[in-house]
Length: 301
Ligand code: A3P
Image (cartoon, rainbow, N blue to C red):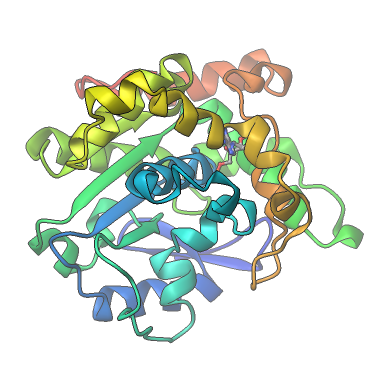
């Protein structure tokens, strides 16, 4: 099936999820050609669930010993996290290209918005690790609405919040239905907790140090007592914080090769902004869908 979308002209349903025309080719190419290695780390999110933050955290974590004595050379100062941890289907395999990944050092860090059912077979068959970060649907929707408005050509004006909301609730949005995306990884993480770590944006905001340490343990590089004494956990959290990253020159003024400005990935970075956008009716509709979809799964927001 095909539907009119908000930014791009059309999105298409493939394996139960919606993809823009231009990106579908990347999905297919990635499914066909990406060869996962056991040591790979794949960061997975629904769009606007905190991808940029997760990319920063995992990159900083995995490279922490390299820059400890030379923080002024940290790649974040010159490069946005989306370039350091590239998307498979949106960047590396975008359009019809098959990249040469020989330059990536192990462990290779990649990211994807692909739903669990659409992951390349090699990812499912290998022992590579997946980190899934989700966010409550109301904030995810609001963030997505703002993001798509920023990407819209200026002469096209703003998307109607009501229309976008209705589409999101019907699942017709980038990588939607949101709930099925989350459930796919939730269930997979329960079946395979050594391979898939399931994180929530809200919990990370509330106890960032705890979850950063969880992340480090899951990825096989726990913080040593010496690192903890030196304050490395807090250093990484500061380095990856919304305040720090969003104020870096590169993120204020830089652009992706595809044209999106890096600053569009930073808006407020908070929990609960939905309250400023959604009516009582909208809130009730979204809560009902969430309750319905997650009923019996053990998953709550
Ligand atoms: P808001 O629009 O609610 O502010 P993604 O990275 O998946 O595109 O998600 C973008 C959302 O994450 C935006 O949410 C953005 O502000 C927030 N974000 C970006 N960097 C962040 C960081 N370092 N810490 C917390 N939130 C961050």
